[in-house]
Image (tube, rainbow, N blue to C red):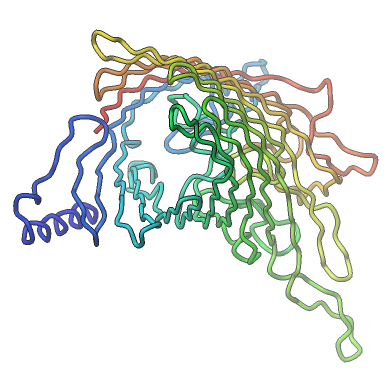
Length: 475
């Protein structure tokens, strides 16, 4: 409503200045409705889609957004007859992923600097029978010849929106693909451009990216209270109290057909605000609540590759080692490795995961009808690497994608072929998604401390078969 009111006011202001240019310029394709700007106001482009999903699952699974965003199937739950109570089907039909967005272009603030921005929202603020409009992306950009500054909420650099998997499912390759949108300050520097003298086209260039990020919709995990024996919770306070934003640095080469890059992500969290220290006060032994300096700092490297051939064939691949990457919607986190009984100071160790995926896509355009067929085959594999140091059992902090004690996740995999048929502004798609998760008993050392990974020979694998059909009307 706010967006529509703003656009209405903008159109009225334009009408007062020039009636002829106040009319909306409708373009009957996916560029949406354009509201012309001037040297003081941006050009506003309305876009979006109405999207409906049908899903069928053969097994209960860990999901969000009303069950549409599927991550992993639940471990088996056997009764005394050996029947798995989690092997039960479900299906649904929902439309709350419908999206509305505004692209903002211009004006120039100088001869060499152009302004742009984006506001993007959907109805995925989901709770039982309530669908709330939520912000997906909201940022402003300042672009110079070689530099670009992004301010606001956008895709996380580890997701890399230029290499989005061709899945039709809402999870878009998660948890194999890092999935996160965060408030950020990002700087991109392009250099080394080479221009072909015959075609006058840029052959390739390097891009160096640096970003400071704050967590919001996708949160880290930690203790739900400062005392020992705390449970697990997800909350942005663990980063906010740290006063150190998430840091990302990346370097990539963008060629005519091949893009290759690497990056590293650093998170530093403060799990507790206070601790209990034993002191002597007026000759009496007592316990005093004091400020805590506990901190867990983790580093996660990533590499990726993309090949595309004249928009007909594309091959994308990514691999990373994630340490404490729960905020990237991955089965990770950290655990308590030691406690100083006198001072109450704690030390932590990160839970690591190796994650990879590869996704070839084929696009076929009909010269007669103009309709488009797109084929995609997404495959992903993930392995739980556990922790470097042993963890105290009752203080282990897992995300919801792992289990505390008893059994934990060892590995998971996915195979997801998809077929998309586009008729002008209408997309019809179907995808079969096989997702498997292997669970087993958690490894312990001789002192009974846990390593966050699975003992060989104790594993069982559960499979979920999902059929996902989508109807999307683009505007």
